[in-house]
Length: 450
Image (cartoon, rainbow, N blue to C red; front, side, top):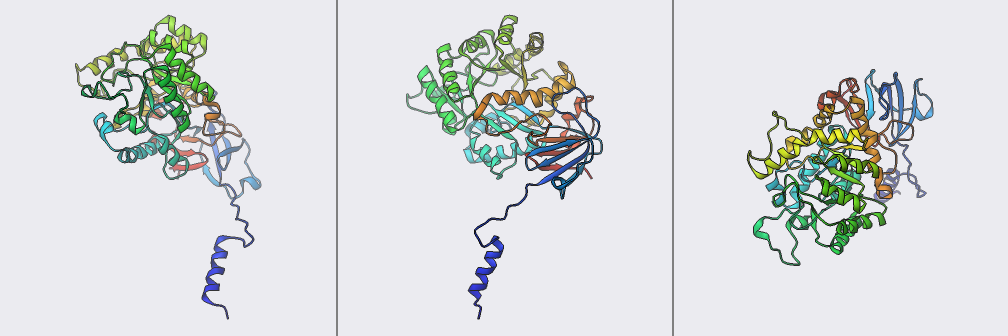
């Protein structure tokens, strides 16, 4: 007689798979995209209609002829209908933890609330077609881990962790009555892991090593004044060459690099002397400094910061922050002209911070680059170009595989666009309408093709 206990055990064994300790091996998912005209991330034109087979997270085959055989069997078919297939977009300057929260809320809320809001912001970024992001300051390690593990939806993240700043620098978010600080006191933003205050080479070295230990793929230091910070005028230089070198050495020992926030020639020259590999912003640079950047092969992560009467500033008219913002805006055209003159490697980034409205304009910011570049140049910058910058992290990159291109063996981060963005770059400004398929790591997160 078979007891109910025996039957229960037998049923559990059947549900668990083979009884000899072997797990059932599921084949990787397959997606076949047909009839797609491809922008591969490097060229200036679209291909004729092509077929692309994705197996798991990787582009397996690209062919003009129909793809058949065992690998394509049972694949989910998406007929692009002649639409454009392109690599997922990459934002080289983000702050996902604080992108959508107003400054007062961001600097006073508990980390649980900040994480909830950031999770929504990350999903929204992916649904705008940005499948990868270089995060340049914030306690983003947990969000990244959650996305990578499948608990949340969002882009691939290259995290810097805490922004490293001197006292009174662009990463010092204290208010005046908190100064002077006790020698062993940590600010609230330091306790969150958003910023790290360090005021000599040894302190910089310790803070750098801490972020690398936590998983930073590159380090971010504040080398000059900023718009949103309250202590520092835009023209001030922050840190010394020796302090910056301490971070550069720590990063190089881990096989990665340092990027700095800086606007002025003096701040940038110091950073270059210290061995920094990327300058973020730089809207106030002069010809001599831009030429030096080109000679050293340093990346310039530029943002299309210009005054737009249709967009209300986050800073009140006449306030010190607004004055600094207008000064910075006034230098943007010259900065892009210098970058083009000296053929400096330019990365596209948005630097969306403390504003849900600004974050939502991510695609519009990319389209705004047409003020200085052709659509092909813009799309290459936001795909294969930015992927090249991400690759500076070397073995610290958390995602092995080639990004920013469509080729066999590359990672399957893909968009299908309703139209040809090489002719009409404004298509990227309306991702809800024009990005009909969004795929990251071989998984389809949006499919509006019917």
